[in-house]
Image 1: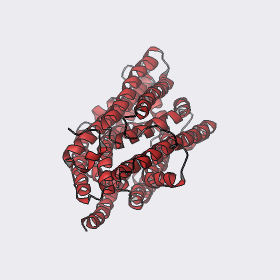
Image 2: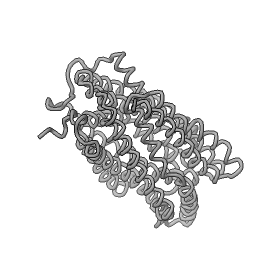
Image 3: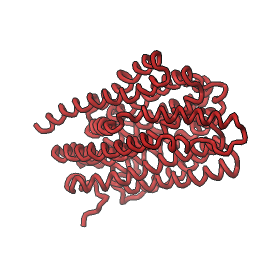
Image 4: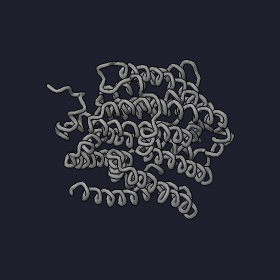
Length: 458
């Protein structure tokens, strides 16, 4: 019986079976990580208060910048590893691992130093006020302090998944999530460390997960592993990683710009509580988006390997199955969000506050979140299609198309809508900008995909 972790089965095994084998662990890991993030915000919202949720929302742009550089290396490296293994170039795959680790250390350190030096000006630029700056600062100082750990851990885990070990990658996430949740309860509830406790728990959990994933690459039985000669940065390898990773990098950079514009508009039309409501909505939407992302992570090594092996019929089949599955996921999210928005928003609300003022603040934030969630998810059933298509182009190394789709949705569609609609519709206009841009970007993605399909068929 063939080794199920042997990456060569990516070119021979049933596509449906492979997609399940690779995507289910990734989805499970993503769901676990997303649930932790939601629970984290629920703890903060219930124990610390609604303004802490707003402060946490202020940190999203800075975290997006860090994630952008992490995905530049992690997504680019993992995609290249899959393609190299499809080409039977194991030494090339090992070089990518070593170069990715070094790039993550360098970029992680640079972001940590700059972020800590200019933390307050950055947070004020992102929409912080005197009411929320202390919460945002307390959280990000610790998160930035562990930034190198975060980058290396996530980058190596992506490469482990792409090199034929999807279940091990899932276990890595489970380890981080479980430790994180346990420490959260201890640090926030028992020790009373508040939002700082949540950040400390996150970094400790990632340190343990990094040790776990490092142990995998130390084993001689692993298809790619730590060895001499792979850590010296090679121009060809670095440029290859950056070119393919540019698509998710641009997604996160654009997300940073969008969140800044969102926070500015929300502050003008609804104040700190509207920003907190956006943080609640973002947590819920990202949960379902991460499920689709897990699916695309399962698709990535299959598409990349078979594209490298020039088995284009298998490439098209995995894409079609992924689109069908993603549409089912986002349609389910749409139904849940439209039917139960109040119940979802109430999860993040203080329920036992002694202060009547805090209760009123919580009620206002919840009302904003309910309205915003319903509007935001208006066309969500088709969002999965555009997500799969963008990741598909990345998986087969079509950098220009992937970058174009990554930037179009946010820069060309979403940014102008955020700037224009609130002038006429206020807070509702801010929420409406999301589904309108989702609809337009999906239409564009389908057009580009059809062109690529015609090329593959030939």
